[in-house]
Amino acid sequence: MNIEGQAAAVRFDGVSKHYGAVVAVDRISFEVQAGDLVTLLGPSGCGKTTTLRLIAGLEMPTSGSVFIGGDDVSRLPASARDVSMVFQSYALFPHMTVFENVSYGLSVSGITKAEIRDRAEDGLKLVGLSGYGERLPSELSGGQQQRVAVARALVLEPTVLLFDEPLSNLDAKLRRQVREEIRELQQSLALTTVYVTHDQEEALAVSDRIIVMRNAEIAQEGAPTELYEAPRDLFVADFIGDANVLDAEMLSRDGGHATIRVGGGMELRLPHRELPVGPVKIAVRPEAVILETSKDESGFTGTVLKSTYVGSHVEYTLDTGLGEIFVADYRFDAPVPAGSRVRIAFRERGVTLLEKQT
Image (cartoon, rainbow, N blue to C red; front, side, top):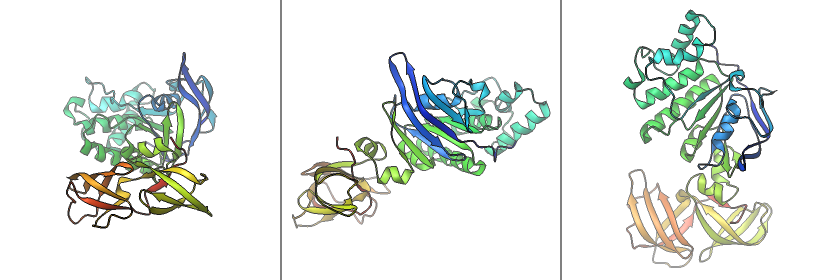
């Protein structure tokens, strides 16, 4: 089996998909570089799965063009595209053995039985399931079934590999393990991969780039760190991780930065992102909030409503003059009890001036 070196880029050029009066995808354009893993992330109904199906050839665009490896495949059926998909349900045949499931696509492709055997065994080895070929899917764990589905896709030696919510049927601990396995395999094979999920932590963990979708359109795309640390608007800030969105005021601009006043006199220096002086909003990540117990009531203060120890950190809910603030404190000596008055400060990273006010 030879997958390495055959990855192909994927490009959408003004693609729309309509189902009658319903617009599932609305004039979107993006490119996935060969060998990258790009995640389509967004809430249910945003258009991410339709976009994946447009790549696979399971749907045809109403308008616009889809390119794979530089070729316009917009009107080609799925069977004529060198693409494999791993479905959310795994879609394994329960009456077939693991080996038969993995080799099923090869058995209808006209290659010899010897090559089918070799490629199926290689596929099982790639996903760590050598020796499992004679078992039935019902004899495997959920994570092992997922790996069988990946092996079945890989043996077809695709130029593009697609994942549709591949971890949604697994428990939390197994999701983390399997996503690491998928990412390691994708990187080792340098496979062009498009991955659909609604789980922001999953997207941050596996992706080279993330495309956040909203209402059939692209809200923002970029590297995981870019989307987390510089969200374009309230939707992206709140969807990529938790965010406290607070009212603030831009006092002045100087070069690329602005002086921002928050709460009872706390001032920050943030990139102004071309926003004018005046009322603004800021997004503050829970881990960017610093709590100080002090009798000094000056500055930005609040009251601890809830204090919850969760092992790796302490979670707080604060009542402040700007509303409730959620805090994740990873550097604590002792939890601050509910009812305590605290002064509030922000770390340099994790605070963003929002480009769009909502």
